[in-house]
Structure formats: C-alpha cells, structure tokens
Image 1: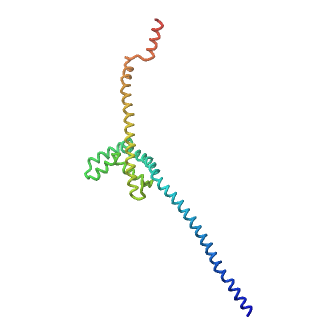
Image 2 (image 1 turned 90 degrees about the vertical axis):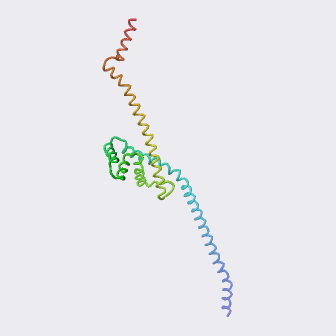
Length: 207
C-alpha cells in the first residue's frame, strides 16, 4: 500500500512537468520556424528588390540593341535596292512592277526596288532571328521594335545617301576642273612647272 501510494505521489509530482516540457519544445520549434520565415521573407524581399531594379533599368538598356540592329537592316536594304551588284535583278523587278497584270505582283516587285518598303521585311527577319522586343514580351513588343528598327534604319540610309552624294559631287567637280588642265598639257599650250622654274632661274642669272 505504501509503495503504491508513493508511486502515485511521484506520478502526481512528475506529471505537471510534462506539459511544461511539451510547451517548451513547441515554443522553441515555433521560434525556429518564425526565424526561418523571417529569413525567407528577407531573402524574398532582396530578390524582389533586385528584380524590380532590373525591370526598371531594362527599358533604358533595351534601346542600345535598337541602334545596333538597325545597322544590318540598313546595310541589307541599301545593298539590294541601290548597289551595282544587284542592278540587273533590280531593273527586272522595276520592269515587272510596271508591266505585271496583277496588282499584287506589281506591288511585290516594287517592294524589292524601294529601300523603305524592303527594310520592313528585313527588320521582320532580324526580329525573328534575335527575338528582340521593346517594352512588352508579347506581339506588342515585336511590333514596336519592328517599326522602330525601320525608322532608325531609314535614318541611317538617308545619312549614308547624303554622304555618298557629297563625295560623288566632289569627285565630279574635281574631275571637271582637272579635265581642262589635262587637255592643255596634251596640246602643249601650257608650260610645265619645271620649264617655268628654269626660265625664272635663267632670268635671275642674266639680270
């Protein structure tokens, strides 16, 4: 009887400590979980901040490829529609654009002779290869990038055309000024510079 009563008293004394231990363990687990959640929140906040900064700075950097990709667009469009290497097919396309019976064929052949029209198709091909977009990730980004490429490429071609025209004009002007001099030298009416120098040297000696 005494042993049983002692055991009961021990159980009564020990049993109140079990909920406390359980509460302590659960409290520690809850604190550890809270710390982990806080760490994840801070990490997610840092990642979100970096992504937001990248998204904010992306439009500023997305315009750099625009001016670079417009260079090959302008180069291809100008070469096909202006340079001598494609003169024969270009003349054939120009003739077909006037003599074809169907309107669609006339417009199709005309596209290959106009640098502005042809640059649209070159820009579309460049966008397919590079996947370049502006502002949006869907078809709107491709549309904005395509028309922007066409405009920048035509600005490049206009500047290049003016530069070539100025160079050609200077070459023609120099050739026109040089032609009378060459004809005078060929006919012997204009003395050479060496003969003039010798005559001047003789005159100074005699004087």
